[in-house]
Image (tube, rainbow, N blue to C red):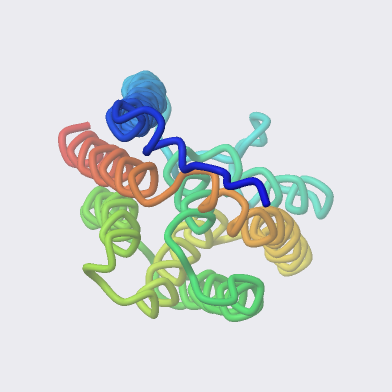
Length: 241
């Protein structure tokens, strides 16, 4: 019978070579992690600066998209298009919906209907409680700070249940832009809000798990920090504008 010897017995340096190989592998993993973090950080800085610049030149809630003019003059079709476009063209509303993909919601698809209902409830409430010009900047600042709250949710510092009142606040400001419209354009505007926000929520909740897997815990924390910074910057702009 032929006896096979262990490589370590034949070559005493075997253990040293093995340890060096493992060390090289660990070093390579750390370099890859740092490279990915660097790319995420650069993307975050660029996006933060770009969105802050947009917020300086474009008020987030004071107009209808596509140059539609005053709410009282909207047609039903314009109301529908405005409802679809408003949450997608306003940077704070859009970023709020996009952040739902990375904050780590349990069973994210089950949140779609409650979030839509809370947002629509806020929009309906805005028709009975007008938003005065003196209060509008503070309300817009609160909406912007909701991005920072989402960042804290991703860090598990605040409960995910806060999403419902926050999306209701967004809905309130979205609804306040159409106060004074005729009943039919008002209804089509609300329908447009449901279509626009519902489509984006379906996309973000569908890709949530895949995005979290790709980001990893480090990428999720970095994204949370970026959202906190953007929310604070938007709130500051809303108050000083």
